[in-house]
Length: 329
Ligand code: TXA
Ligand code: MG
Image 1 (cartoon, rainbow, N blue to C red):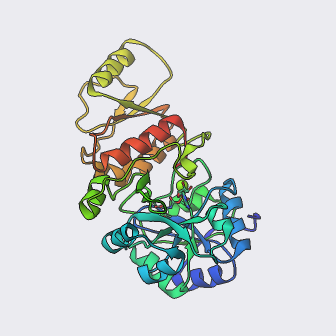
Image 2 (image 1 turned 60 degrees about the vertical axis):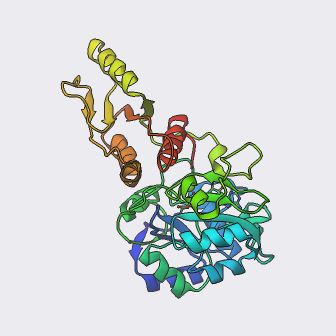
Image 3 (image 1 turned 45 degrees about the horizontal axis):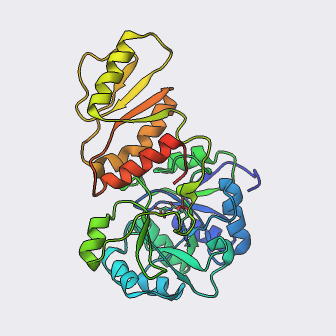
């Protein structure tokens, strides 16, 4: 995107005008902010990729106001897709389905499938209903960086761009939607999120597979440079004790932000405790703002305890592992 001026907060009407004019609008959802464009406007889609610095073969999610409209963007929902959509939409769930013929290949990264989502955030709902069409949008962050969970995050992420930002407050979900591939004969979770494998099993009586080498391409497989700049460290309680003892006994320039429930007292001065909830849903809602805080405050390391297996813990483990490996989600 050309550097035509700083981003600005817009209202829903201005946001719709901008989308119709082929401009970008960042918008809130209950998971994270999206960087939206008219999904049928190829030149607007091009602007999304250049604003993000994202390779063009990475597909975008198309956001729609309801299931009826979403179904038009597919050549056909499977029974499982229909069931999941009925149960979890509007909500933090993206379904990969076969695309309708009119869906631009620029949106799908050249694939015959498309990712569809009906978000529940009231501002997203209002935007989508008033726009009346599909809004293609990845998370509103530069490629490889942490997703934005507030309008301020978005403005800071794209300081030089002529971007309209619709402010819907802080995202309550805090991590990106669960992505379920419903395009083949079996179901697979391509990205875990707040809609869990257990909930999908309860709904369908089928346990979805996890992400596999043969699964369709997602951005998650790519190594990138930062996410956040502080090194993410994931430890068992015993490993945390060992780290604390090591830091206490050795002088180094490292500074640690300890994001653990019930941090021990008497920590060495290079370690700052930032108490977090042991509940993975609560941790999800704060995770990216903790990453940003660590960078803002100049910590060299940000430390988490390994989450409990199962449920939303799977999504937390996924985001922590990717951040530790410095991959985008
Ligand atoms: O919560 C979210 O999902 C947010 C909000 C804005 O909706 N969006 C988001 O988009 O996280 P993005 O582009 O950052 O991540 C979407 C992921 C990417 O890894 C992309 O490759 C994958 O979904 N994806 C999209 N369409 C796909 C398709 N047809 N097949 C396989 N993966 C797909
Ligand atoms: Mg993303």
